[in-house]
Length: 177
Image 1 (cartoon, rainbow, N blue to C red):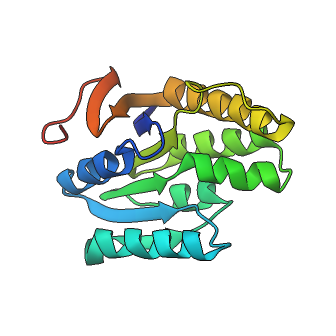
Image 2 (image 1 turned 30 degrees about the vertical axis):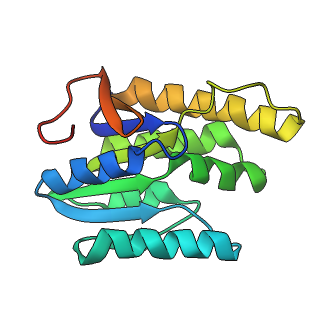
């Protein structure tokens, strides 16, 4: 178990990033934002720019689509690192045909070794219909596997639905609801 790891999980646009950011800001630790999105089109660029503006100057932002383990290990005591998001990170590796289990092992090992507090945002993708194409079905299986492994190792897991947090493992911290 990673005593310093909190997983925030919910559906797309459920409010999970807002809850994760609030958790980090309320920690009174130095804020580090680890963004995993690759800017490959104008829609993503606009979304990333909006997120940066919404966060403001409180956060130090690191953009890393693949080797998040290196950033997690480098984070220091007194920092809280928000990895947003594991779903995009997994997608990056899946499309690059990287070994997903080995990448997940690296991430979990980094979380266990990190001196910082870590909050990981991830999407719950298993509550919908079975996708019609093979890549989407593989993604759904791999995302479910990643989520289960992260939840197993996390000290706290917070579910989010309609912007409302609920504890799945551990207690909700003060000021998050």
